[in-house]
Length: 303
Image (cartoon, rainbow, N blue to C red; front, side, top):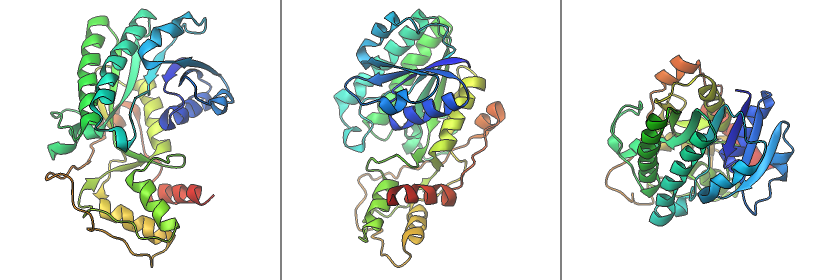
C-alpha cells in the first residue's frame, strides 16, 4: 500500500488506523464527518483531510487527490454507541451507506476494500467464530452489519473488487471513552464506587486497540479478497474474570456488584474467536495480553 482512503477517520478506530498507516509512510486521504474538529488528524504526516457525508460520498471525487488509491478502509458507521445500537432507522441506514462506498470504489477504480464487521454478527450462535458460520446477530447494530456484508459482497463479486470483511471482537485501549463494559468498570472503580453488573458468565475475547490496527493494516496488505477474517486475541475468559483483573489493578479491596443486574436476554452471547486464517494469511501476532493492555488503559484514565 502506498496511498489509501479511510472513511470515518475522526472515529476512535479510524484515527488510530490513520496514525499507524502514516507512521508506516503510507499516504492517507482521511474522510472526516462534517462539522467535526479534526485538526489533530491534519497534524499527521502524509495525511489530507476531506469533509464528507456518508450518504454523499461521491461529492469527494471532485478532489484532485482522489486518484491512484490502493485500498479503501471503510471505518465510518452511524450509531456506534450502545444507546443507538437498537435504533432501527439509524442502523439500517448504514446498509445503503456501505453500498454507496462500494459504488464509489468501483467508480474510482479502487480494487481493494477493507470493512470492519463485528463478532456480534455471530454472538447468539453459541459456537466459535471462525468466519464460516451462519450469522446470529444480537441486536440491530449487528443485524445491519450482516445485511451490509451480504450487499457489499454481492457488489464486490459483480465488479471485481477484493472485499475483505472482518469480524472484530470487543476493543479496548486509551482514547475509547464510550460507556462499554471496560470503560464503565474503570471509571466507576477509579471513583471509589461499586460497579454493578449481570452475572458476567459470557466467554469473551478482548483485543487491545493497537493489535486491532496492526491486523487491519496487515489485511490491507496481505488479506485475501472474499474472505471473512475474525480479529481478536485468540484467547478468551469469562467477563467476570476481566472485571476482577481491572479491580485488582486499581484497588483489590473495592467491591464488585457481579450478579446485581438481571440479564436482558435469555440467551447469553459469547465471543470466542478462531483467528487461525488471519495468522496464516498475514502473520498477525497480538503484542498485548489483557494484563498489559488494561494497565495502559487504566493509566490513560488516571491522567
